[in-house]
Image 1: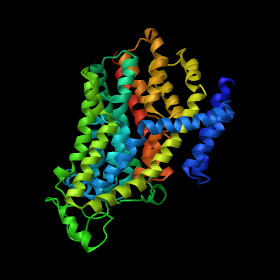
Image 2 (image 1 turned 180 degrees about the horizontal axis):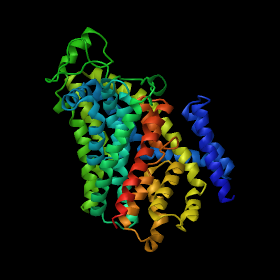
Image 3 (image 1 turned 180 degrees about the vertical axis):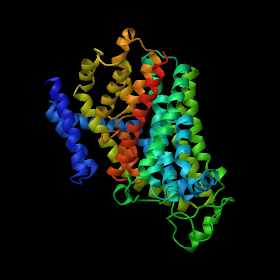
Image 4 (image 1 turned 60 degrees about the vertical axis):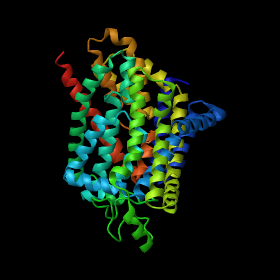
Amino acid sequence: MSDILVLVHTGVAIAVIILLIMVARIGPVISLLAGSIYLGLAAGLGFQGTTEALATGFGDIMASVGLIIAMGVLLGSLLAEMGTLQSIVDKLLRMFAPRKLPLASSVTLTTFFPVIYGDVLLVLMAPLVRSLAPRMGKGGMAKMSTALAIGINVGLVFVVPGAAAIAIAGLLDVSLGLMFVSGILVAIPTAVLTILFYGWLVNRGLWNPEKDEMAVEGTKVGVAAGPDSNGTTPAGTGTASDTGPEHEQLSNHYPPLRISLLPIIIALVLVSFGVIAKVAGFETGFVSFIGNPVIAIFAALVSAYLLAWGYLSKDRADAAISNGFRESGIVLIITGVGGSLAAVIGQTGLEDILGNYFSAGILAPLFLAWLIAVILEIALGSATVAIITAGGILAPVLGSIDVPTVLVALAAASGALFGIHLNSNFFWIFQPLLGLSTQGTLKTLTLPMSIASVISLGLIMAVSLLF
């Protein structure tokens, strides 16, 4: 099949998925599978090749993030039951005015948390975002969800030790120290400017809660009043799983915030230590084991369960786990089907096709690097894959480009932010965890990440004028 036809069929498949979800109001699982099957058959994979790609893609993504997602959701449910999230909400509200929370959150995540695997950070932070949003008034969910998306993804592509930042630095032979400093200098203003501009859009009517938000099943956080400074909860309050006077009496035994935060701290420390050890070159088998996100989240989950059991009761700890199972099911299914779509796209040979089209470099070098990553991100649905592929395309021609290599790396990273949409696994994890409709997710993830991509490209182009 010709390269043009593969490009056309890929575009048609993505359009079919969007139309089924947005116009026909068909669920994302059916829509994603329909688009994947169409692309596989139309691109010449055949019946067997298409079904194999669907199954392989589902299995591969489950092997990669399935346990992390499931255990992360269970951990969030336990923390909600212990009042942890409400305590954090109260402290953040005392530290920052509500209107400053999105900016403070996004800059903090961008700067300090790229070391944490993106899906892990999303799972850990989503319940907190759902708690904070109602306190912010009009457009609170839009602003806080966008702050989370910006914080995770901008850090991932620009700031070492974000996986994508490390990948592009390695492929283009940029020192990690230089990538870290230059990435920070681009990432922070990108996050700030994007949040400010997006807030302006929300204040002028971009967000429609009735169409953009959906109810989240399971434990509801952010509804009732949280624990006071002593770690207790006033009578008659707690999480949405309250069941009556007996529950109210037990709520007085919530653990102090410094104790209930231990599971999250355990996860962050273990994963951070593992990544730092790998970058620094002193990784061992044991360090790799304890720094693996699956082991780190499991350790956090066990510690949270024991805390809930000790401070509340075994019945309440088990009830929180049951709520978590209900929430994690839909997240896992949609994520797996998203992996199926990505696998089918990968089997079409799209990466090689794009490489042949753009390796000649007829456009300005930085814009070329950005454009390659944009197209790959839109087509493949993974910022890390888009950056790695773009790096593979760009590396052979760097010798003929009279631009500092670090700027080319930053431009490719910038392009990988653009257009995160329905073929992205992150999209389908983001949506149910934050209780958004597909339209709402496009507004809080696809739109702001595209804005961030354009803003960061402008910053990089401006810096290039100095060389």
